[in-house]
Image (cartoon, rainbow, N blue to C red; front, side, top):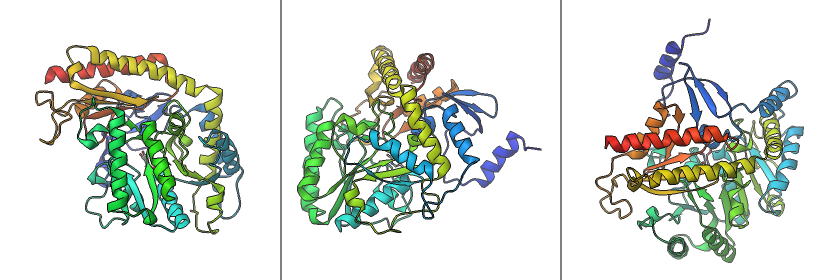
Length: 448
Ligand SMILES: Cc1ncc(COP(=O)(O)O)c(C=O)c1O
């Protein structure tokens, strides 16, 4: 007989590592479209998508069926033994959606962190240089190399040092990172960031030692801030000048999340490598790095690999995802729902009772952040000078949303909540989520 939920929750409390945090002490028993059902019967509207993964909703029937069928055919087609069919079919499906035709050589792995590490490993080998430039606020994962590249919160690496050396951070063009007010123009933020990059290359990591610049086109754990196209263009120019590889981490922003297949398309900038995961297989563990064949032809067989890399079931799911993206016009739905979401958030900002506590609404497609004006943690912070605003608004609003039946996540060290609903969410569920959010904000403000 299966154990009761109470017994299992006690197993969790007593025997699952404390090193993982969770939003709710609950057991998810079912996922269906935009909803998750919990052990106690609660049906939660999921505006997290398992941190930007289930872009096509939980258990999309076509994706789940493709995985189930693959389970009955071939589960583990180890890639060092031979190709398997779904790996090749997936690559065939990915080639036409790449943001640049030069991106034509793929390596598939399991998680985003692994793919990030694969990209850095290749970049170092190909350029014969060691150092990597990353952004303040960047998140690239929690494995050893990836956590060394992560600069969003110290909790991800604190106490586990020494980290992989040769990582040099520069400020992302987000007003907080420059300690400027939210009204600062994009041009000013971009020129300040690019200036800091030039200083970095003169003072800390010589171009001849710098293998790569790694950047998220929409910084995720750093606050849900889209990189201005002029910033990415500036990075491209500087990278070209010095023979540095430009790597875009689209683990969170890829596969339609921002309203385009890849956020890279908003700038038209060509990365030398693109890292993908999450939405690629709608919940099956799969990630990848794509770069130019001319670069990967320099690698030696055996240099890249992994027991489960490009697992056949995950690849079958990913092929189905690629088909669903087309068949169900997912990008069109994303754009429609995005317009509704931004309009609803704007109405919250226009509400005189709460509007002054909203510092910023930003994002692309259905990767949207709202930043509150809660008192700053630093007395030197010029951006959120609102000592009388309710404290810790982001986490309190997210908690209220959960009480009202909707999962919503915070992000970054700032007061930001992030909206990552399924890309095929209905108009009705989008409205429901926006109403819950508006109520939650009002209640938290009233509470003070
Ligand atoms: C931009 C980015 N890169 C890398 C990762 C790491 O991916 P994973 O958790 O699959 O290792 C994440 C995860 O959130 C991410 O958002």
